[in-house]
Image 1 (cartoon, one colour):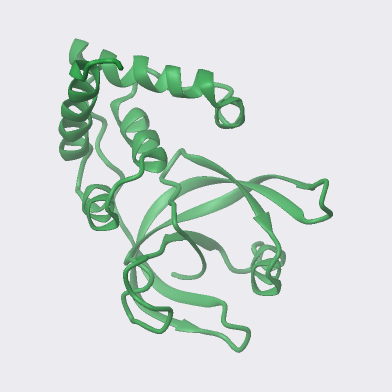
Image 2 (cartoon, helix red, strand yellow; image 1 turned 180 degrees about the horizontal axis):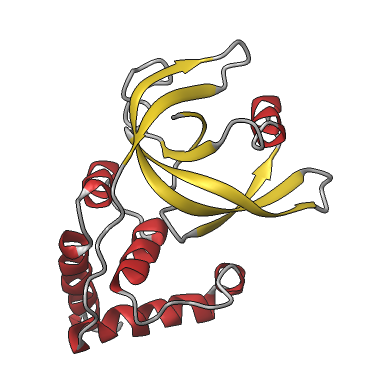
Length: 194
């Protein structure tokens, strides 16, 4: 499958949503051509320069545009939703520097059973949504009882070393990230409040 790439310092994963401002001509073209050639959100590696082959990490997410509007500053605003993880096989740039890749699909994470131990993932994410109305507005029907949904939303919003994020999103299921998130949330709750 050939896809155009929209690289950013954050990623959207399957069932995730992201609002984007589209201002560079190459990405305006990407949006215009989305009906003919699909596009994927890609995660940038901030530790290498623009010409390095590892500048764009190999796991990307095929997306679809679910909403668009003209923003107050006159730019195009789009909202995308993640559909499927893909792995880059080969990548190149077109004349206007738009990144394009040949990709293969990656299996969706199998659904992980939700247990009492996952309540902290839900409660903490509900707090994040309550404090971030723009993020909350992207999800009119949050899947609070789905481990995959919870873990993927946490991986989208948390700041962490890019190598760790890449490892977690590339894993074959949610279990590794689920365990690390549980540990992190427990540590956060145990820290004294100043």
